[in-house]
Each structure stands twice: as structure tokens, then as C-alpha cells.
Length: 343
Image (tube, rainbow, N blue to C red; front, side, top):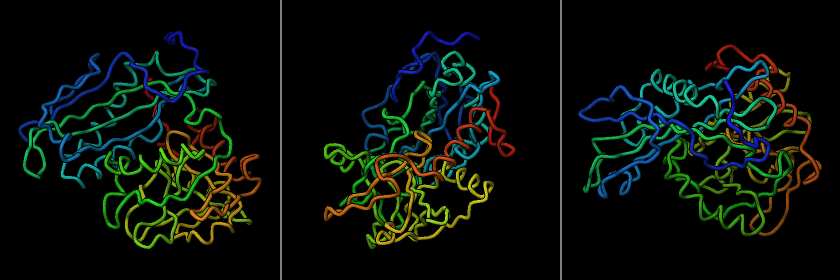
């Protein structure tokens, strides 16, 4: 199978229409059998539930070309389960886990020529999304929905590559206590857009959001979980007492790898006033895997610098990132079930 004639090394993290998307509709209490489609447009009523009450959830995962030439996907079962849970939380009919995985396989295989080659530093980003298409005026769940998956080749999330970035502590909250911060819904990301734009305008890569109940504990950034490393190489990742942190699949995988590599790890609330004790900090998620954080600037202007600051990433997070990316691309064999062969 011949790849598309693209300069894979220079593509950014953006949308590029491919050959096929996958679509399935929910009507009369059930999902239809679904199909691949070359049509990448969506037609909605002006009264569709998504436009008024934001019934929408989504996922993000990637497909890779391995060293041996296979096309694989990384842990799609966990994305399927998380989307199932997200849909239930905002009263949407969950798309079955087994059908989610099958749909991912179908759409990746149909767009195999768009999966970047091994060694290019790029991947095929997979975006499942579900939203309310049924008309609704009163505040209530819609009765009709659409599940879609589109794919697009992407380069690195940060154009500068794997280099330390600077964050600012946000004055805003990204989620409410016991709200929807622990599901992957567009409404959570909408809340982070204003502070994100503000941070970028001030020269920061992202925000560090504190817990919305007390603004004492570290939660996450605009679109990624945090990992911290102590001076004795223990990996620490924040725990929320109010269910306002999204359970990251990348973070879960990195913690598993840390354990296998012999690093100690701890899942606990992380006070903001203790982060200066850590030697490494990183943001982890599907898009960037790990983005090392060089410094965090507090609301009063004081700076917390990790390790070598903006010069280079720390050794533990670098080792974890290398291990995970090599598993994803078939250089190393990972735990059973992590890498799913598509074709």
C-alpha cells in the first residue's frame, strides 16, 4: 500500500480531510449499523440539541505505522470505555464498546494511505465524536444522536518539538466540583478556551488549573494531565477529591511503564505549594504524549522552575516518553493488548 505524497516531516497539528469517515445514527431507541462515508460534512436542524444544550462527547487516539510496516492503534478499548462513560454522564445513549473498536479499525484501514510512515514523527489522529442531532427546545436530552469518526494525519502538537514549555497558573476554573471535569465533553474544553487564549497571548504554552473547590491542589492543564517527579525519581500524579480530573489513557500507560521500569509512583492530591519540591513536571496526553514543563508562573508573578528549567527535559520523563513512543510504533513490545494491529 503506497502512502500519500505528503511531506510528512513538515505537517503540523491540524485538520486535513482524508478519504473516509465513519458515521452511525441513533434513532427510535437504537443505533443503526453504521457505514464508511466520503462525506465529511454534517447537516443539522437549527434546533438540534448540540446547538442549545451542548450534548456532545469526543475522544482522541492515534494510529501509527510500525517499524515492520504494520498499521496499529494504541489501546482503543480504553477510549471506547471512556467515551461510553462520558455519554452516560450527559444522558446520551452510549455507543457500544465493541462497535467503537470495530469502527476505529474500519476507518483507519480505509485511510491506510494517510497513516504517516515509520520514523516521520507524525501519526494518524483519530477523532470519535458523538452529538445530539434531534430537535429539542425544552431543557432535556435529545432523542436522536450521531456518532462519527474522522481521521487526519498530524505532526507534533508543539511545533518546537519536545522542549520544555512555560505555564501560568490560571485565575479561572476549568470544571466545577463534582461536575463534568472527569468526562471528555466539549463543554469542559469550552471553559478553558478564554484562559488558554489569554495564556498564549502572554507567551505561555498552557495553564495550570487548580482545584475549583479550594484552589489549593493541582488539577490539570487545558487538555492534559500532570506528572511530577521527585528528587528520588518517584512519579507522582494528582488525584482529585471532587472528580474534576479527566482520567488520561496516556497518563495511565505512562504510570504502568514507570512501574515496569522500576520507578516508584504515587497517586495523591498534590498541593500547589509543594510543587517547587519536584525536580520534573510534564503534561501528558494523546496529542503530545509528554510535554516537559520548564517553569510555572504563579498569579503573583513568582516562578517555580523544574530541573534545568527551559533548557532541557528531565531524565525520568524523557525515559518514560521514549519507552511509550517506542511501544506505540512497534520498536519495543508492550504489555499484552496495548497495541492493536489494524492491517
